[in-house]
Image (cartoon, rainbow, N blue to C red; front, side, top):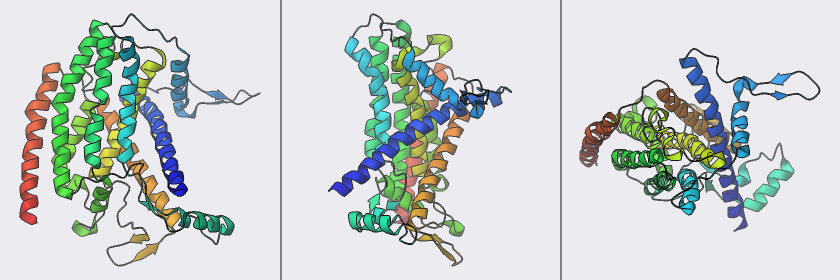
Length: 387
């Protein structure tokens, strides 16, 4: 149906714009947080001048992200003598595209009914046209509504490491090859613990559907508060967040690309926008990790006591809201949570020192994996006992 194509196309455009925008904002947040940590001002040089005036708009350094993008596009696209030219050119896309695909199953809002978005009192003609076109159709606000969303996340997230390995091998550089080997071993070390943490949440919620997980967390719990996963499974939350940061290869887990040892690791031989894709995918992955943490552990797009009709408070009071306002609140709540969790990841990056490689492996195999396994067993026993 044409209505379904219009809505799904709008969802895809929104997701791409959201990820690219928040990744750009995270580059600014990283600069500013690092400056605060080091007692500096931070990036504030890039500006846009108002024509025919001497007024320079710096916007607290927000234009630095745009300047970085322009620099990547204009730099020389140098290609060294590689082992395999096709794999060398394919690697940046294998690193960036799976990160975008993972977000396809993440719900960024509740259920939207396009025919009821506008009030007939304010926009009578447009509201009547929307109702006539969409009718009573309702859509879950996610690009792909899959019953096995968690399996899709685990399957697609494992593809990104292939881009890293291909980049390191095909570059014909010993530093790149060593960085690719480190990335592969790091992925194996932390993927298992991350998967066990997600399985514990699947056992807790009784579903693989991310949207159903959000709905489950919206139900009232102690004192009328929502049953967010972080309260029910704090160990799984810590394991998943730690393993996800390690998967993204950022400090303190940046052994595959640490400048002091490997120059830039697996993408040492990349220039121009090919290097830009590796860097951009890193910041997009911050947003994707934050979105998964928010969806599985922080209630997703839901707010305490917010329903499809408005707020329903535990003491019996209600506050009915228009459908458009409810949709905007849900999307805003999800975006704000993603931004805050992303800021936490960036703060970790500028707070903790880099691990030695043996410490990195020990953390994955000797701490995270046993904790995740024990937590999964306890979760299964408790779930079986309470059913």
